[in-house]
Length: 357
Image (cartoon, rainbow, N blue to C red):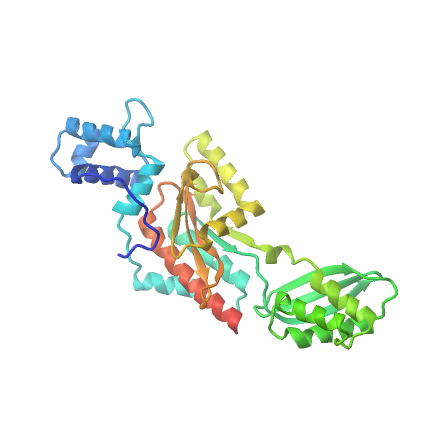
């Protein structure tokens, strides 16, 4: 199958070393346990003695691809070894028609908002991958369908923004005590005439130019309301948010106290706003799947976890967000990669059509 992600340069291995290494990693991904030379001699089907296999394993360890968790134990792949396996030795499977239809059905539901679609996609990824599904929406400047200024009490006005995708943003701003209600209606009508499916960012310069040149046909109070409303900061949701489903699955692989601490650190990292920016930055320039193993990701800065991420884009190629799976380093990469890749394409198509409607 054609690679869905950027393949890195990998060291050269002869066929015997390659087969032994692949067998060790396959066993690790299946069970998570170290593999010894006697077990490997039975598994590899190469008709090699345990002594010969130990020599090859020692060479692979010297190359930084394997390590021994205990003195007399078998070997496990290092993060570098997993990277070699993923980029050069792993076989990525194809999705069945039923799996494709299931992904499309989970993402496409009538009358659902963009937020609901993202929630369903995250839950679906968690269910299919046995990891945690993660969906990230970046900072956006959404097209506005309607804006309304509503008086809350003396000195405060609520700005209600109804977006084209059905979401609603509420912003509160302070106003002078001597303004009159008719100014709210005037300001609302003025902005609605100019927005009409455009973003606030795209009309801000035009509106301010009209006001400053006295072409806006607004009185002083209505003009002040319009300018103040345009200058209000966006809600937290429009700054980018992260949806995570299936966190409990990450605890199913915990076998020791140190594993529990790694899980706690992971959960804490995923709650930070900075995490969103880092994940989006890491996937923004990617044409396909990005795979981060352990400390390769600046997001978590500790070992034990892997992340398979892909951007989802509009029909014009503009990045809308990112979607993926987080799990222990022995997640089933060969299965998860095509699931994440296809889901990102479905998400991009559906969200792109929503934004364009």
